[in-house]
Length: 338
Image (cartoon, rainbow, N blue to C red; front, side, top):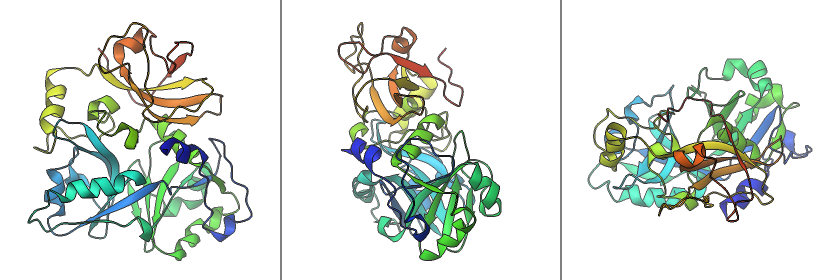
């Protein structure tokens, strides 16, 4: 199950200076390095790659450059998200970063529509190391190597660094050889290897959803706030699922959206877990869990998709017996429910 992988898998310590360090399995470490071995990379190459993807993805792929990454998603014809990912350009090749379990099915589906286009789509996960470094120590000691604002990209011979949204400095690092240890030379004595909880919690606090297998085809982009975090373009033209996504944008408000919350349930919430309502009669249920991580304040912090009305009435639960309490927390961006 994905949730077990996210909660229990620890930093695999691929770097020599980490071998004698104990892994912090808690959710937050001040100077952290986290292996992203639960994520994978898709490579898209060929002279028609931009035109091809422009007709497939929710965001405007032509805004991706050597210096700028973006969030995007791939939908069914009904506008339901099949996969969400971060897109970046390295040399003359596009890459998608997404949960490892969705790499193969995403490649298989995209390949169905390539036809005569000069596009090649491959799984290149095994050719790269993926990890996150986070904390003030990173910015204080590695500023010359780092990109500036959120989503910006810094390119180097053996590695690519992407600045990620969050409540502390955090950076995604993609490397393709062993020389990248020189990047971390100045902070190697400070870095603490952490579990996947660290990555999950920082994404949750940033209001960034990761779509795992359990939630595949469960949401349209607006339900996971993609229109707010720049994961959707409403001016780029047609793409798969565009009619449904655009209709919701221009003709009506989203009755369901993503919220951040805290819960004190005993068992770890998992992606795809159903939510419950005492008064709810919707055939879609009261919503689903997107992601969860232990909170340093106790319990779990989670991202959920739920009806706005249920949340306003405090009629939303993780347990069927309605004995738990969900405390709704602020997201780092403004959401207008009016």
